[in-house]
Length: 343
Ligand code: OKP
Ligand code: ZN
Picture 1 (tube, rainbow, N blue to C red):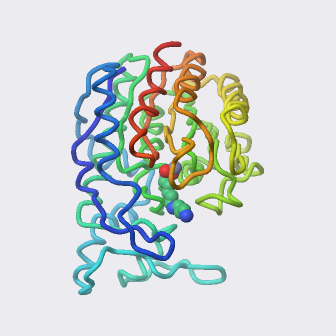
Picture 2 (picture 1 turned 180 degrees about the vertical axis):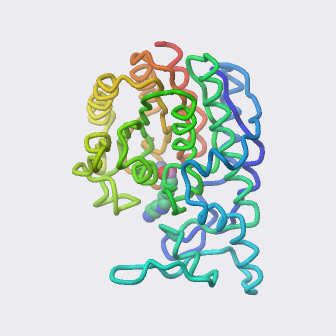
């Protein structure tokens, strides 16, 4: 399996994440990639390639032009205001307030942010753009006939909605890749999101569509970020009714239970018979992840990689979360190895 990876991810090195009332060094940090690359090089499932540049057009197939423009200009506007720290949203269009977009940078941050933990920094746009190009390039490998590919994306993407950033995400890499498959002739694409957190952005983007089946296994919103989406009764709307599938699970969920949800999701994918499968691959389901509450162990990642492979579909893995950095390489590459071992 080929991996696509870009060094431009290092341009996203925020110093702050608002966590527990303190500004801490972000969980989503550049060294995550170092550990994954080290393990990839040790196991060597295939070559590691740089992305091509597909420009803004495929990004604008998924995202609001206002969000894309905002992400490119926010840092300069923030600095022009004279602020000294990283750019953090402090107010929102909350219940019964207008949804008009203000001119001031403080207003725009609140308009486009879905959470405050994700500070904007000088290199954030360039890193997010590079991450989307990684996903697009890996998707093109599959279009060119590869049975699978690994888009080693950073920053991650699945919380980024049509016109919102947050949860460490700016552009929805998996959604951008899905749209590329469709724009190049695919009829149906399935996105299976196994990150611990609900893929609210991906769900938002495809909620009214039947050409993308979205399925997510995640910590129940009563107890886990993003808290305001991901309930089992969210099933899609209009033409998309029945094409969103959520499997929320409670604190302490072990692999045996998690795998039941996976089996149900895989059955639904098989029934849908997509041309391509995209796996939003977060390994924050690991038992010692610092911000999550499932109990998967390292060998479980190998096991479920094999489960996914047995669908027999052309499969694009897109990296999302995973914050137990010492084990992120092992757990991530275990999924790849499990897939290849069963393929
Ligand atoms: C991004 B990805 C916990 C706050 C959680 C944001 C988590 C973003 C996860 N008290 N903050 O899905 O791995
Ligand atoms: Zn996550």
